[in-house]
Every structure is written in C-alpha cells, then in structure tokens.
Length: 260
Image (cartoon, rainbow, N blue to C red; front, top):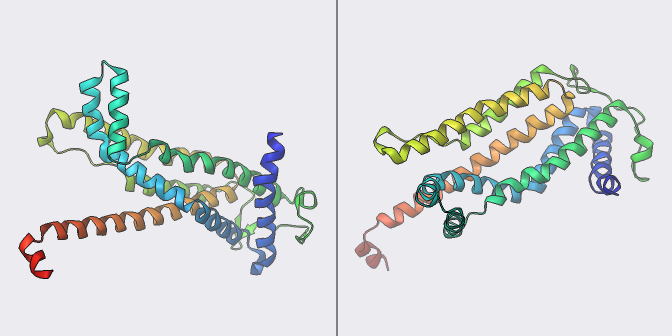
C-alpha cells in the first residue's frame, strides 16, 4: 500500500518528468535534465524552505535566551518547557518549521535516487511511462561529454561537500566576545558544536557522495547551491529591512513632525 502510494505520488511523476525533459532538451544531456528537475523541486519547496531558513536563523538568535532559561528552570522541566514555548511565541518562532523541508525532501530524494538508478540504466522505461510520454528506449549516461552520471564521481562528491560547507557556514553563529562573561561561555560552547557540525556534515556528504551515482550527487550539489542563493537573498532582504527600521528609529521626533 505504501509503495503503491509512493510510486503514484513521487516515483512515476518524477520518472516521467525526467524522460519528458530528456526528450525535449537539445543533445539529451542528463546533467541539464537533473538541473531543471532540481530547479522545479526547489521552486515547489521555496515557501517551506524560506520558512525553514528564517526559523533556523531565529533559533540561533534565541539561543542565549534559551540558555538563560535552562539555567533558571533547569530543575523544573515542566516550567522550562512552558517558558521555552512562551519564548517561541513571543518571537513568533516555530521549531518544527526548520525540520519540515528536510522531512519533505527526504522521500523526494529517495524517489529521485530510484529514478536515476532506473532511468540511467534504461530499466523499466516502458512500464513506468505514461501513455502520452515518448519512450526514448535508451538514456545517455554521459553529461558534458565526460561525466558518467551512472557511476560515482569523486569530483562531484567534493563539489557537493563544498556547497554543503558554504551553506552551513552562512548559518553558523559567531562565538561571544571575552567580555560576555559567564553567560557567554554557554554560547561559545554552542558555537563550538555548530563549528564541529560545519565540518562533519560536508565530510559525510563527500563520503556518501563518493558511493552514490554521480547523477544523485549532481542533484545534491545543484540543490545545495540553490539553497545558498536563497539564503543570500533572504539574509540580504532581512539586513535591508533591519537597516531601514534602524534609520527610521534614529530620525528625531521633531523631524517626523515637520515632515508631516
């Protein structure tokens, strides 16, 4: 039942989209097909991803206050939970929002893995194609004339890891200055843990990517690169908005009255 639902909702639609794009893209370059599919998936997930990025950034900014709550109510778990939820509500932060896109993208990633596995191998084409989709019979595995996307690629795995590092680097919180005192020690510890994850996740991406089909690694690279672009746009907008608010707040009340 679950597999039938998975095939109907994810596997077959992505498989057919893959073949349709392969048929219409000049040169039948599978790498370009994967890029277009990545852009489509990112556009579909854009609202959720935007909310996730905002939630992650807000969670990091609230970390010092959360640490203070743990110190104050650490012995009373029920009160700690209540105060934490109150803090989230005051700052309009939903922790689940940061995890939702990851949970949604995971089955999509699994479906894409199966699509690339079967599509690049030329398996089950007739069985999975909709009646109106032309069967190309054979899918070319090469991209740009030298990337065999059906086999693992160390170069693409390293690129995917580098993109993962860049994306995580943008989210990491800087440690507190020495003058922050005892309260800053916990924040520095959290920053240290974030720094460890900064290197651990890209390393895992490279190790896993070296064992996967290069097509899937290429998708991961494209997807992460688009995530970086989305973060840059969002952070730039937030910075400009904060700057505008700061400028308005610095204008003397008399100046505002004169303007009126």
